[in-house]
Length: 88
Image (cartoon, rainbow, N blue to C red):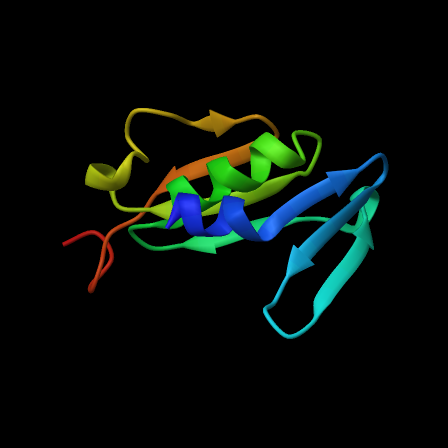
């Protein structure tokens, strides 16, 4: 998942381009936020943080997906979460 996200992102100074296939979104870096949840969320957030390290965000992921090893990724906070029933 991280490689797929990285392949769709590019940056030119203060703009980020997100390739959506038939079209693309171009946004100022200041408008980029990283939000995610699930097993692949840490890998995908890492791919975005490489391109836009100043982007803030939060990711909730299972401990086995990397949430237990790290609490931060650039300006992204990583929180461990359980699934399907939190805390059980």
